[in-house]
Every structure is written in structure tokens, then in C-alpha cells.
Image (cartoon, rainbow, N blue to C red; front, top):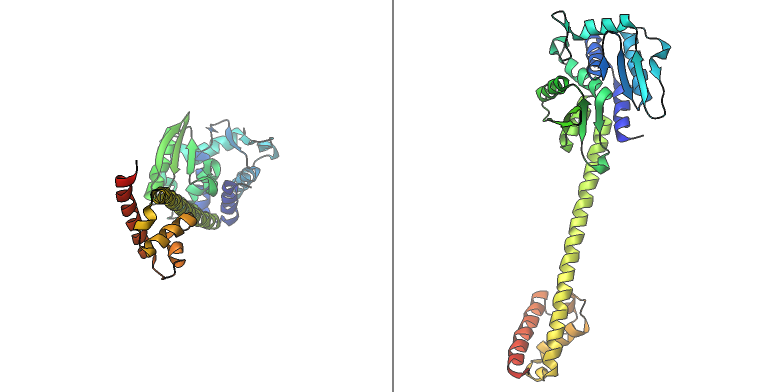
Length: 303
């Protein structure tokens, strides 16, 4: 199963609603039906479990649906109710305002402080998607009704979530890309275990990125050090071919020979191989002195 399916399964398994919150939960579903009229209620989903759960919700509020309302497909399953009595009741109960059907989210239906949470969880089951944690951070709700998207965005903001809106084709989107916000939304709508999984994946991902950056940095530093070492070796060998050995003191001569013989060793490793036990900075000082002497000497003697 995908991470998104896991989130929705957790929400359905943990769902416990009082009467008002049950209606708000169903209201969240219905608001994101692609088709809702006096003659048809329609919702498509890849997840058959969600459609079966929806039927059970209708049953709990006394709306009996036939066995044929769910059609199984190879990839997409369909919930479709054409019972006009049921359709008209749904419209009357949830979307009738001033004698007219209005497809909008009305907080007048929320009777307690938890109704908004129940509504949003229903909306997520109907039209929500969250990406796989290892692929990035993205949670969205989609609908072809711009008014519903705008109302949902305001509802989420009222709960303290920083959501954004955009359009993709004919769909209006309400989305979040911040991982912490996604974790909070999942916890809020009843998927705390999946929220923790997302948090754990983020920690693993951050650690992996830190290790990768550190390794890349160390590799880059090593590459620079090796490149600098070979430049020194080239300079020292040319210096010696022109008789430069005779102008160096014994400690500088030994340092130059160590550098030539061990091109891949770091300064600290070279220092450890000296007889007089100098430090890394001491070795750096000696090599710098050899460079200065070599360049001055070659300026005078190199044809």
C-alpha cells in the first residue's frame, strides 16, 4: 500500500464521531463529490475501502443504499447513487440555503468545536493526496469547484494551517509543501501514526543529506589537497634537477623528500613520519618555506 492509502486507512480505523461530527464528516465527503445533483451522487476512488466506508456512514445516519451503488473497476472504483429520494435528501440536508442549492462549505453545519476536524478528514478521504515521504513533501485537496477550494483553504487557515492554492487543468488545488505542516494536518485529521512515520523519514532523510554533504566536502577537500601535493612535487623535483638540494637545510630537505615519496598523505600524516615529531602546522610551515626557496632559486637558475 502507498503512504497515502495508509493515512486514509488510519483515519477510517480511528474514526469515532458524535452525531454532529458524523454529519460533518459526511459533509466533507459530499463537498468533494465530482457530481452531486437531485438525480445523482458520484465519487470515484482507487481505494475500494473508502467507498465501502462511505456506504457505512450513510447507513449510520439512516440513509439506506442499495447493494449496487459501488462498482468495482480494474483501477478506479465508483460510488454512484441514482435514487432520487436519497439525492434530494442529501441536497436538502447539506447544500440547501435560502431555498436554493449552493455548492459551498457552510460552517453553519458545524455544531461543536470538533466538527471542522471531522469535515476536513472526510474531505481528505474523498479528495486528498499526500506524497510518499521519501519522494518529498506534498499534501493536497483537489476539486473542480473553485468556491469549495477557496472555502476549504479558509477553513484550514482558521485551524492554524498555512495552506496555498493553485490550479491544475480544470482542478482547483489546496496544498501544503512544508513537512511540519503536513505532519500537523495528518495528526489533526486522525492519522498520527502516519504523521510519525513522515517525521521519522524526514529525520533519516536529513541525516542522509548531512552525511552526503560532509562526504562531498571531505572528498572536495581531499581532491584539493592531492592537487596541491602534486603541484608541490612537480615544483620540488624541478627545483632538485637544477641543484636545489644543496640550498636546503636538512629538515627542509627531509620534508621535501617525504612530500615527493608520499603524494597522497595529508599534512598531519606527513608530520607523523618525521623524526623530530613536528606538528601539522610545522609541516605546513616547512613546505611553504621550500616553495618560497624553490621559486626564488628557479627564477635565478631555471633557463
